[in-house]
Image (spheres, rainbow, N blue to C red):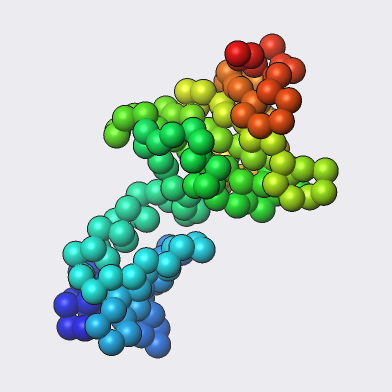
Length: 171
């Protein structure tokens, strides 16, 4: 507990009823376990160094976190998507090929006819900057239409796999 309090002080976090907060990251300690809540994700560890690494990563990701995956099989991509609040978009994800890359593949799962998860698309070589803009936009759907839709090649991964836009890659 003492190490946890010292670490939180080192980061300049102040406590309010035992909860340390910075941006939208909340940290607390219960017994011998430390917890970090960032968005809808909760990370727990008994080691202060693990908690500090998680806080640093969360701070670098930005205001709204979403996992940035690396070199994973496309079959498993949908499992790592993060739900977003949008009238048209169900969930998003980002896959970088190599650590340190500034571009990657954006995965967009749109809402289906019944309002649930619909078709999954992959947009190739999307800049990390555009991905972060998408997550932080007041309207995910509008940001997608203005900065992603016609600017990046894409493939449809589910349903009828034929893309309709000129930038579609139909294999």
